[in-house]
Image 1 (cartoon, one colour):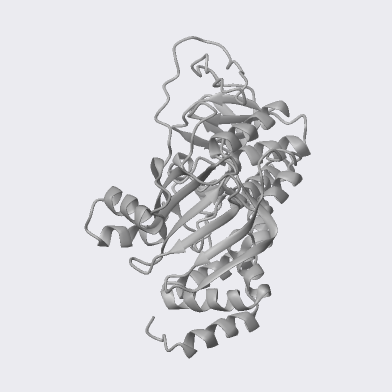
Image 2 (cartoon, one colour):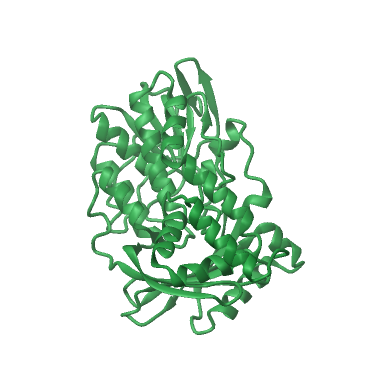
Amino acid sequence: MRSAGPVRPGPVRGRPVALSMLRGSPTAWCGRLSRVDDMWDLVVVGGGPAGSAAALRAKQLRPKARVLLLDRADFPRDKACGDGIAAHGRDELDLLGVPGLIADYRPTHRLSVISPGGARVCATVARPNHVVPRKVFDARLVEAARARGVEVRRHRVRALTPHGDHVLVDGVLAARVVVGADGANSAVRRLIGIAATRDRHVAIAVRGYADVPADDDVQHIAMQRDGWPAYAWSFPIGDGTANVGFGMLLPRLRATGLPGREVLHGRLAELLPHLPARDLRAHHLPLSPGRPRPGTGRVLLAGDAAGLINPLTGEGIYYALLSGRLAGESAVQAAGDPLPAYRRGLRKHLGRHLRTTDVLARAAQSPSFIDAAIDVAARHRKVFDLLVEVGLGAGTVPPPLAAAVLRRWLAHGVRGG
């Protein structure tokens, strides 16, 4: 769920005043939108990774483009998330021209996974990951966009009206292209008539922080058979704290018949008893069903708003940065008809991968399938690396590997899962 509440602009006229978000001073909104602005080349709704990536890419490709970034919250602001940024996400930051954005955070080199049935693997990943609190990461991205010439305003979007070669936002902002990157509860998605992700593809999680040894550099995932798919995680940040949480599918949570808070908090404590969590906050994740709808007309959807979250792992930051970048490219390079270009970009970069994760997510409804996959990964380094690519990047599974996991699965007599 989005962490910020509704924003009601004040009655004073004027333009927004930019304050440094990296020093903790919020962006101040100093005016109520009261007249139609000149045409904007791109209006981005949502200042998270997807929205900032779209704005950054548009200005990177066309420095003179007029780009406006709207968000209903001040920055920095917290966002419930696992905070994990895989190497693939760093690749996107490089492409966006901000390669040093998280260089001051310590990389984590090892990943440990315990399957629902107790199979274990712990190995060094081919390329290290990072864990950066979203309160820091998102604010830095927004500040980078501002430094590149993007105008940032605090505003909550309530209406979108198509007008031939542009879209009118709340009756006062004209945009050649709009990118909706406003999260799982996307108002933009709702306004253009695209249905929300069905409950069977929605996960819900609770996230907090816990104290860990300062030298802890292992990202840990502990899966649970009860209510599967369900797992807890501990992702060390590098400063003596770790992002910890627990998530499961929404229908499985409802099937318990218990209050969600009781289930989520209780299972987190059960799976990670040595890491008492604080600052617990819940959020839901619209998992990719394999063929997400990327928008309509001149309105493109990116990140969580497009349902771009890995259904196997819940990873979404890489998808957000990638889809935001592609949306920004389409907005300035194919402004006359941006949606086909954006759809082609998503298909090129994520098409086979999303079909792979969709198939694997169906197979993974059997916890024994995951047991077999982790068992094979523990025995074969190449399999471990490939599973990381599928879970955190845009990897696919070659038929020989799928056959090996299937043989292992059947050898254990788990046809009934």
